[in-house]
Length: 254
Image (cartoon, rainbow, N blue to C red; front, side):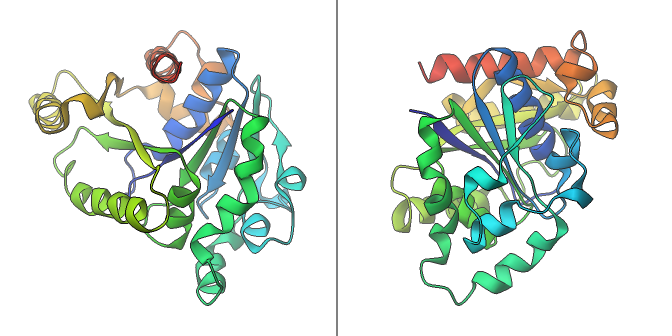
């Protein structure tokens, strides 16, 4: 039975999409069957895996509207063992459209739960907000990965996110777990980066992944080619980091 993992943080620019795309590719290379669901209207995970966003006709929007099945929305990618349910800018309207629907927090869960038998991991790239899209992702998931950038405002807003996770556990999904907090954009030359790592590890100890994602130029370049870091430059530090994270998650879920 597969596991559904949301990658969430309401702060933008913390490495959610970078993590979603490259963790999916790394798990795929390690021979796990992966589905990536793009639940962000910016659709960066979709373009980051080489899918032309303008050509998307069926994706997360139709899935949440229940006008198409998950099977109809799934696209194979060039990454080994990785499929995607793409997003399109039309996803931006979904929060308004779902607002007066019954059980609006459960739309994604109803649409994808049956896919757990077909995949080892289903990853959901969340939008940088705590709105209905992210709520749907957390309600549908078994666990959540929280990327935290090693910069000055790293812990700002984290309390709010953890409170959202707690309220989802209480009201919508009692089994939701924190898979781990992932430190991203780490630069060992900067004292601030090292301080953030110490602070997060001190406060959250066992909840923090051992793997730290280092700042890496190649990681930043890969999406402009529509490729994961594994395909773009497997020898880079970024690829090594994400393969290490994938192994850590696999070992944790044995």
